[in-house]
Amino acid sequence: MATEKTIKSAFESMMFVWGEPLDPKIAAEAFGIDKNEAKKYFEDLLQEYAEAQRGVRIREIAGKYQFVTAEENFDYIRAICTPIRNRRLSQAALEVLAIVAYKQPVTKNEIDNIRGIKSDRVLEGLLQKELIEVKGRSEAIGRPILYGTTEVFLSHFDLETIKQLPLIDDLEDSFNAEPPRSVDEMRQTTLAL
Amino acid sequence: MSYKVKLNIFEGPFDLLVYLIENAEMSIYDIRISEITEQYLAYIEEMKHQDVLVGTEFLVLAATLIDIKSRMLLPRRNPDGEMEEDPREELAARIAEYTKFKRLAAALEAQMDAASLKITKPTEDLQNYIGEPDVFLKMDMNEFILAFKAFLYKRKKNEELQAMRQDGAVPRVSIAAKKRSIRSLFAKAKKKILKFRAFLSKDGGRNDSVATFLSLLDLAKEGTVGVRQGGSYEEIEVELK
Image 1: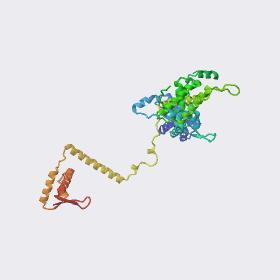
Image 2: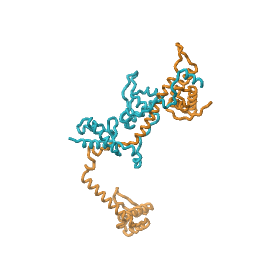
Image 3: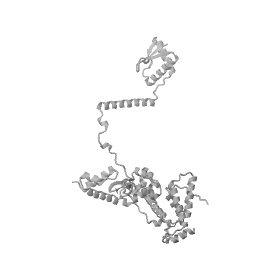
Image 4: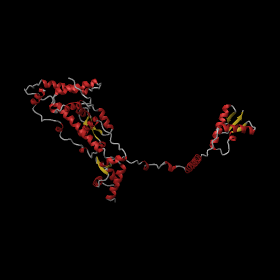
């Protein structure tokens, strides 16, 4: 019977070789243990690495686990090489990606309406980069395609789940908005201009 | 009145509109519609001047702006005598929605930048551990021995060459001298035909062979000798003319 120590040790080696996020389900099969038990060991390891402040950490992406370098060491890594950072996305791509990420599942038409411009080619690019995928079809007329984000998206943006998406404060802050006044009053000020 | 608008790259009509509104420091809930419409149209005009393709989307919003402007000038009451709702309301809602996602896009970008500080590694190349063992393990032993012998021979030759270079021991052979020696060999042998080998000096090495060959070519060109060879790699026969 494998002890907790040997299982964790094996999981570390497996994560190292695998590189990509490793599914606890697959790791569990190696020992014939329950998936949830495996997940607990991965969680333990994640904690241990974080507490010991190791230069290599474990992160969770969509319920899978992966070794990553500690972000505070980025500058030191740069001393030995120039890591290729994720290629930057265009402003249009970021806009569409934001709409898909925060509103998913979402149709192309909804995206176009928000942006006031067609997004076909941008969507195509995001699909190709595997940041978004087809999630199914809407029940609306014409059964339009619904888009959502992928696991690649989560890992690209270092998010455990989609719930971790960054939030912004209330919209009102961004405008020098006075509280909306009565319609008549508004009309008068405008006409006075 | 003309507007000097620097042509930024806008992602769409809303992007442009939001830029103009922010620039004019207006609230989206209280847009000075005639001012913005004028600026918006001026911008589109500028785009045309600079041969930027103006997408239909830009024109659609221009039409919307003009429509709102006209409705603002002529406030209407509905049959119940109430004022119509502010014609700018729908536009404000759409701008708010668009701006929200523009800000979320910026938040995402910041998140992406932070994420890029963490480096992952690709899956190990497991090629060496999968399937057939490497080819060299299956190599025939004799082939292996031959290859090794060839390697040893080459290395020995290389060493010799190296030694010669270092010693400066390579004797210089001049073509003119060689030609003279060829003529005298013919005279001595009192024969019309001699084999190529006959002209090589003992222990002359490669340099001598080359010099001999070049001399013969030269003599053949002068018409002093004729050369023939029965077949590839056969001895060359030289005939004095």
